[in-house]
Length: 346
Image 1 (tube, rainbow, N blue to C red):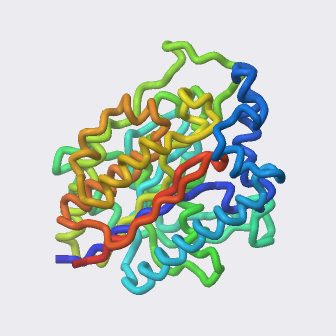
Image 2 (image 1 turned 120 degrees about the horizontal axis):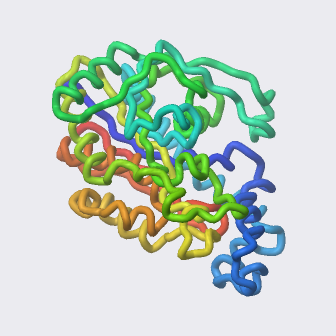
């Protein structure tokens, strides 16, 4: 059997920027005209949120948040380098980037020869924004995986070239962050795009709420694939690749609950208690809790992006493996809970 390394990280976009900009999503949410009056000022926030905001609008907390995130990413990169895979399969969401009104697949195996990554604007590395570099793909492995998934009953979309965007930020940020020290990223990738945003992928363009537009029931898009389906697809992926000739790293890339998706918290802070439940289930190998999570529960907690991890947890179940290292980094003001995980071959 082929050896498989399982990894989970966050691709939190503000990590690519500077600390003084890390709370910009919260500042955007404070412009919501429907926000209750008492929440418009930090004096009305929960005490831990006020403490994290501090007297500098979160800049000091941002530095500490960054330190934790980068530390977890460095551990993940060390595990990846020690394993030295033939390629890295990545599960990540596409937020109105490559897939738009013309087609929204539930999931798609991207079998490109190579992928272009663009350096973001005003980045923390002081690199010229708009500069690009390429990462190789592994089309042979990607086509093999798509073929076998279809044979096992998963009607899998596949693509040989991009439509609108070379590589969504769930994948490109994962590579940028795993190469945070800029030593290079030598591994071919097989990105598998997941439609995590479901009902909001087109109507909100997979992004922050549009306050000027009220979304009635008829304005919403069809839902994302169910957690159970993605769990089972992840399990099938692990089974297929375990029987392959390749040495593979499986990686889920996403934050967990997102403030800007969590209506019950007025889009200001994430649903950390719900994330803690999922984290404990992951840490202890309680994978049925993951598989039995309902799509409605995911949406209620703003956990849409956790669907990328649903594939990973299905793979862990199939491999009979529990993580050896996990980390959970919570926040009130930096939009999303972040989780990290390493599960090496036994």
